[in-house]
Amino acid sequence: MAFQTEFEFTLPRGFVDMNGNVHREGIMRLANAGDEILPMRDPRVQQNPGYLTIILLARVITKLGSLPTVDTNVIEKLYTMDLAYLQDLYQRINTMDVPSYKGVCPHCGQQIDIPVNFMEAGL
Image 1: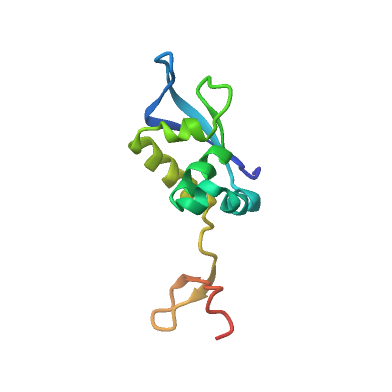
Image 2: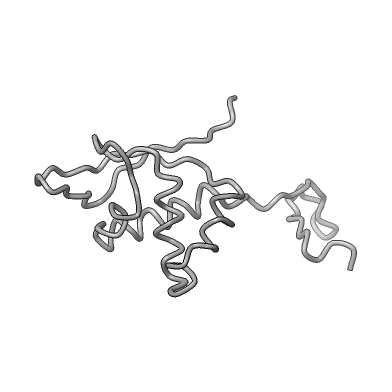
């Protein structure tokens, strides 16, 4: 099974360009460290931390309909429903599943998955 780095999506409403064309289908790639760190230097984020979302999405959305590029101007003009959808997608594809290991319940003897919390490891 290949490691998936790009994810197709369909916006609930869609981006309407200046010609009235609606763009709904797109592709979002996994974020990398630079996507998370570099926008913090942007003056727009320093003035308004909420702008971080706009820059992050503009960096990781590689395709939206037939638009030649997806930049902050496009993301700013999305309907709030579409912005919320993309924020949720970003979280889902970039958040690691909690690792676990197999164990046996000491009370009932059933095999169970035990979550590993690295933040509390060694305490």
